[in-house]
Length: 177
Image (cartoon, rainbow, N blue to C red; front, side, top):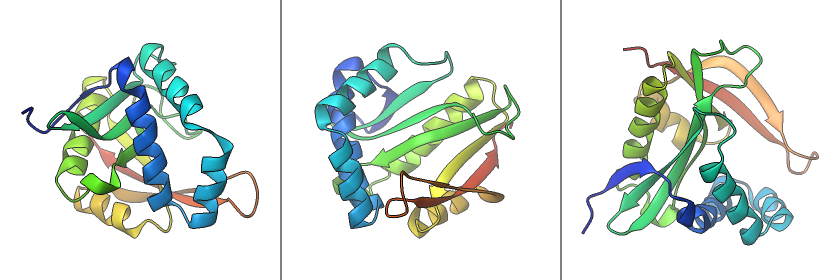
């Protein structure tokens, strides 16, 4: 048995990360948005993208982390420099992706993964962390607020058309200590 932990992802785990992401999307998004997004990309393409992100990250401070329980992956996160227009280069990092497999939620994996994200960003020299959260994701927003994050007034909409547009709000926290 391997203790529950978080570590850097291995290239061979790209398929498991893609599968977790697909399952998480069905839980995170309204049904019509999830169907549209899932129909636009297949598991094999997602696996290739994750493998490339792990093997050849776009930036030196870009990291893919995985949460492990026993011998299996139960979640993942991506951290790196913030690319927001108002970000301070070298000071603002971001949690760009974060998902815990729906079957493994409420077991402490999200908290471990969140702590590892902050620790990784801090180790890379960032002073603040940001996170774009769906405006309707009350559970994630509550989780982050309880962990010391807060809204900073940033908001945006993403999506290809009116049927799949998602409103996001930005949360942030000071990680300099």
